[in-house]
Length: 147
Length: 103
Image (cartoon, rainbow over all chains, first blue to last red; front, side):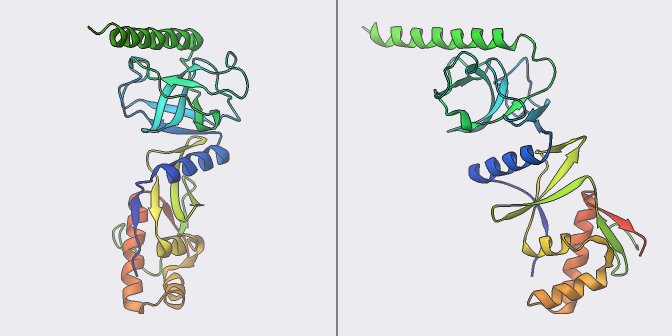
């Protein structure tokens, strides 16, 4: 017989379940930022408060907790409601990243950051979207004009 | 209680209001509460025996009663059950997951 308390190292499926369960049970959850991709708005070590997409539907420019192929990420929604038509896929992007994340189904957005300081999020989202578009065009140009 | 590191079997504990136990999929996890929300950075995992003990920390059952239940439920002798129970309680105390109660 072995008892014990261990810090949980959850895989992707379990961590999604835990996040969704806590977001259903509690008005909000808090999470510590671990990467630098959202600097300067969100620096590593900062704590953010999140609410479920039901309580706080994500909108263009919001920072959202999203399930990407690379794992759970706090990235900005650069294409989504109210501009994205219902039933279509959305886009996220790290503020410091050059490129968009892969297209994602809305159900892969697990939570929305609800901390204050999100003013101007729509403009940040649109600028980030255009930044990603510009990077993509440069990439295409570099490939097509290769000597 | 003799000390935080070595709770006595006569001690009675209750689950802290700052920690919630949740059974999710096949796992039993303890989620700390901060303000009105949950802290996802500090989730703890309990195995089957730990969850069994956790669910009995109701503020009225003593360690002796819980150890007796352990011996009945699991294939274990009482000496080992006492050791494991005390070690487990020390761990729960160290993360403020339980609070001592008057018997």
